[in-house]
Image (cartoon, rainbow, N blue to C red; front, top):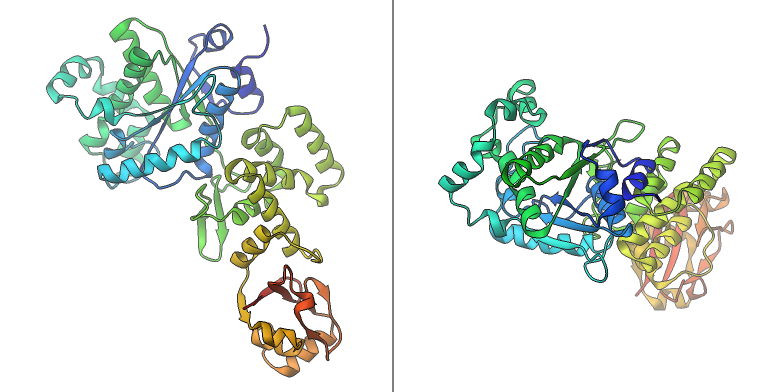
Length: 429
């Protein structure tokens, strides 16, 4: 028997727990439909969501069918798992708009058409029409309050934090279990996957399927990742404190996403190549050997950054932010792509200077003052004389030097630098 999707997930580090229901054997002999629930409370997925997304993508690549379930119904209640306080409830319009965005982002990882096409479903379709008395009679009778309280996500809220839990959130487990039963009955879905904190909800669904129809189903959970330094995956420390890295380019520009991966700790980079790219393990092994022999080269980090950014934002955007990254690490610039110049203008301060002034040549001293790279003419001259002034990342040491349109990249911009890392872009206007 060849490798199953479970084998692939296991060897790449995706599996935290798996039910003893014969899922590996089922994956070898059947086309499994596997679902993951996505909470539509934000406008974008962030890197913390990507492990389950990649897991579903591996299912599709191995000939199975992924189901992305938008929690349009459950999202209006909120899952208590991993939360210390009750969520704010969303309007239906918010949920629908976030679901639309979610589909666009998921389509970067797996296909919604062609063979083994993924399904995007919204549980509002079957949860909203439910009648309370019917639901309690037909579904609620299968749940023991004792066992629900014993679930880690509920117990943690009740005991550890002293926050308590509303009846609204307490019922979340019943609704998620009903989702699994509904998908099993109407779509032939036999597997559910989710984060480590979803184990109790997943096993509750498997038990409900068994009780309601006598059917069998499977479940697995993915690890909740932190970096080697203990930071939750997808969070970056910056001037504004801790920030999430979002897939939406309006929330996190592609360059910053690329830099997030470039800055990966050496201890994490091989693990992340397995989890966040589709590169073969043999290729990843070769990168691991390069890291061992020449850690300063950071080749695995560059591959990780390029592969992931390419998957989310496309090849053109990935190449342009790679170009920007190389420039901001000091590579001398003789030419630049229009896309990279646009990305660069987002990342460094910009001053607009008229074409006429550059046509006749502008003293470098004046340019340094105007861009605030130097505070005075004397400071500017000292900077140039000490070899600390750069034009397009080339050191200029002539105090009388002038910049003109010959230095303008694409005829549009001149990149100035003071010292090692203080950049400013002069845009021709």
